[in-house]
Length: 256
Length: 263
Image 1 (tube, each protein chain N blue to C red):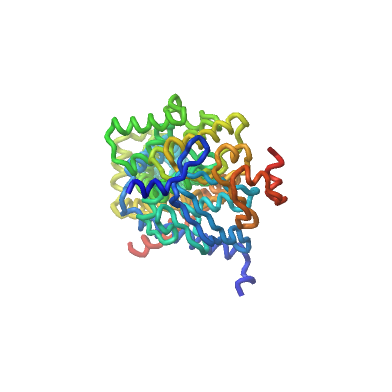
Image 2: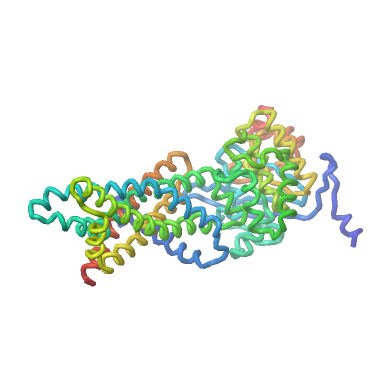
């Protein structure tokens, strides 16, 4: 019976099963000693600090462009004063988390996939295992934990920078002051805007780390597989972010 | 008691190295297949304390797979592997970790951790398995680097090292935990003849200085000649013949002869 199922479909379900197994292993290992704090902190630095530049530039541009593009349309309705509220809600709820998530899937996911893939190909992971160190704990648990905790921080930071970018745009085309801009921003935002969008970024981070480590850790032998691991980490990671976002929006809508 | 031990010790000729009549590795009827490809089809092997056994065989015949089975990087389908009195196939995770600290595995390409300096590569296993104070810690690192003549490489990154230097650091990394057994996967592959010879003599030095037992997987006959106390030849998933280098060099078997023709 199974021979009639196309190989692509079988492979898809095998991948899903593999990711499920990896997730179970992650939660099984994360509470066991040793906790590899040194490597964890190194990963926080690699993932968080080293992404700050990219995230800052992206954030400013998102806010700037969004505000600038809104001015002609909003002015037709005499609603230019609503732009700060619109920009902040759009960025906090959707644009900030999704765009920063996708950018991190590209930068961090591919780098994790390539790093672990090349370690696999050059037998470094095997070397770790035979030197009686648990490579899953050292390489996988630390990276997934770091992405899960750092992506939300990067998104919060990018949201703040993007809102500032919106102010820059409005201050260039109009006479918006910083005080009035931010008073409109904060009066528009509620707790129910910030909390769900922050929660979903933890899932984005988890997905990016999970896919990157899974693809790298399971790279088949050969240098070609390093490229494949990096590439598929980005593709699958980005796809998962879109799917998680869709589910999160549905849940938020139902709850609210 | 001492007398009893003395009777169990056999002196062999190679540079006066002592081989005890006590098996540290015992493998019997080991079988392993990858799909329809039967790689190991009933391997039997015994390695004595202090002995160096060379596994000869053509590329892709399962020599490296055999080494990986010994440290359970690959799980065999059936058979028995007993290392230092422990049944490798039935060990739990904790016991396996304990056993692996007593085995040094030298990979074909050394497998140094790219993102770490030489010092960090050596510290990696040391920090996890030994509780040493700072002085002892540094002393141990210096000692192992000294034993492979690479003291000056301590702060270098693996990318700054040549093939031979990488191999030596790989050896130092395994020596740091003072293993009783060393498994060498193609130690001279990709090296020039002079460096290959240096690595071969390094294997002998390890045997002499630390009394380690070794299995050396290779198809480099010059290396086999220098390091081997005994050679076993792998063909079609089984050992077809064993003996010393001199004994095998006189063999009439065409397959065995083909290895010696290149020397």
